[in-house]
Length: 437
RNA sequence: CGGGGCGUAGCGCAGCCUGGUAGCGCAUCUGCUUUGGGAGCAGAGGGUCGCAGGUUCAAAUCCUGCCGCCCCGACCA
Image 1 (spheres, protein in one colour):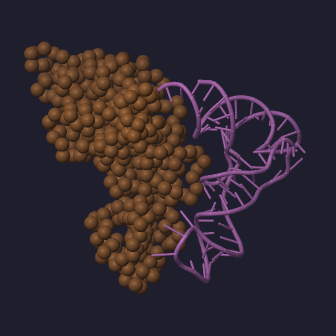
Image 2 (cartoon, chains in turn green, brown):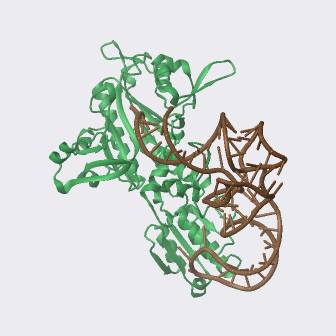
Image 3 (spheres, rainbow, N blue to C red):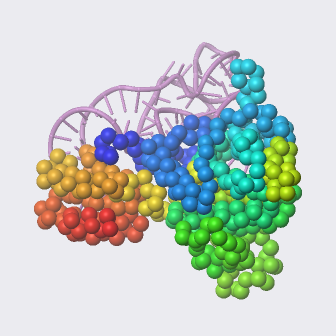
């Protein structure tokens, strides 16, 4: 992509509305534009990152055995009357009427729709387990949207729903998601801590929030240091095997968000050297809720004994649009955003410091062409070098390949790694090799 | 929903208290000079001062109502 044809409206100053660093940087980098409180348009750079994150989530969900569907944003109120949630949900639900005066709503979540789909087709335990997910826009009419896309009213969420014949099987589904989530966040360059979450009236131990560490995070987490160091299980585990030990390893160690924190237990269970408290952002929430929807909505399956039983369900959410902000909170410096390679809007930017200079143009074009498989941005804009450096540091593309008249005269270019600031001057071939691996 | 604050050019702000017909920086456009970390000079364009009423000879400024946005709190499977 040539910058001269792209649309990347960067700003030197942040609007005064933006209070937290990710919001400021997203606006300054030209990623989003606010249309209303908690509602944003995604500009090309923001959309590129959003799609990258979405794809990582998709790949890891598929790997863990989930199957993608796409449910509508608008849902029929009658489904929510079946589950009993239409009246319970309150003001957060955006309610709409169509031309026939039918009650619709903009989905804040999709348990009802997925349960309706499930019950229409699946009748036997032999067709279980199933895990269906979608990545779709949700709307929750928050009383106080804030912090940009961190807490918007409209947001992109991956929501998965598991269906099993009994609790033991549901636990296996839960474990798959638990581990898949750790892999997702690891691939996004994040350190994530699973903390036990309130399960509400259903009880049990099957609910976890995933909190990513970021100094500017909103909530505080307390955890055993070993849990953070343990990292993700990786993609090559046996997804159909017994995952309980891997999960147990990670749930045995103390981890709690501020609301669930028990200081006495923390001190008792965790040796002083292992105690860690940090700021974080909740980006995922998984839980098992059994028959909460299947029973009222009559999603029954026939078991091996010929008896119909309500299917055991769980749901698993990842805030995809929130992750864009979360990653920035976790990865930025004074100059701007530092994208992990896995979600960077471009893999590399070739910076032409003197467009119009035939020799410089030739080298820059050559580099741009050679990098075509690495999602390159070519800064061919007619700006001064300082302005280019500032803007490109701001948008955080991982590699900067700088082509200027001085270097070209000496047969070299400069390669800069955004994350470390490390620069090396070297021949073009060597620079290309360093980027393409 | 309780409390607080703010709406003046694309962005950041001043002007409001004490009414007299709108200004600064950045950005934009033109020209020249520049060109390795957000250039300099010269010139130019752009604002029904959130909206609607009211007071007044006169309202960005005072009064009333409404709308929008932000922050703190409460809330947030």
